[in-house]
Picture (cartoon, rainbow, N blue to C red):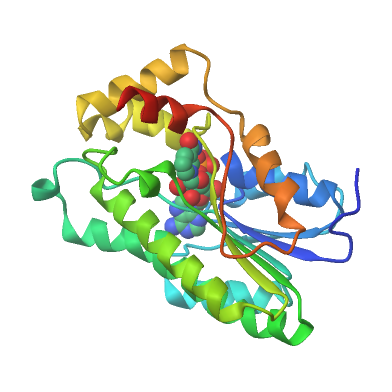
Length: 256
Ligand SMILES: NC(=O)c1ccc[n+]([C@@H]2O[C@H](COP(=O)([O-])OP(=O)(O)OC[C@H]3O[C@@H](n4cnc5c(N)ncnc54)[C@H](OP(=O)(O)O)[C@@H]3O)[C@@H](O)[C@H]2O)c1
């Protein structure tokens, strides 16, 4: 147990499972109190049970702006904001998508990210210290790769633009904003992409992720969280941090 974030409060969205849970547990292991946000209260309680610092559980659907405002009010002062919650759907040929589902993905993956930041930033600026990290994806680095994942790719590219612009605005304030691409990680989202509704994506995408799994190349959520937590305390801002999983390098070499 370290103390890198002792005395700080970290809010992690989507912390009921997967990468968000590992990030919350890792932040608490470094002394931070944690605010855990997702829809499933049961999963959040499961995360809280793994944490020995103060853990506040808030069940909320972040697609609703009123819910985002309520989360910020209940959380109180937050020093570290990790915008991790996202969905990979809707998937499939763009001509077949439901515009309302596309809008729902934008509401969670982009608008909630900005809205939580808007609510929590004034306190960070007042205290002259804050850390904002927005989870992105290799899909933003290679926007053509996730063929059949137009909504997801759109949202992650948007999140990256939002983050870099914000970092420039905040330069010198003590509040940093960075992007984290977590690698290819064994979570329920990855299972969905490989086996579930993600089968609506191009077969090459399916085959690719199935192969990554068979070759044992998936990171654990804890491994991925570790790469982010190692960088979080520093002063870097406006950066794109990557997990090291070799996947992007493999894709680059396969594409010549
Ligand atoms: N896994 C990967 O390989 C991978 C690769 C690249 C990028 N990422 C990114 O990493 C982040 C975490 O992904 P993951 O794989 O850990 O996902 P995950 O296992 O599917 O977990 C997603 C979390 O988000 C929450 N969430 C979903 N909809 C929500 C809503 N409407 N309101 C509030 N919370 C909501 C979920 O809880 P509830 O359903 O209970 O709300 C859950 O706690 C995402 O931003 C993802 O895009 C993941």
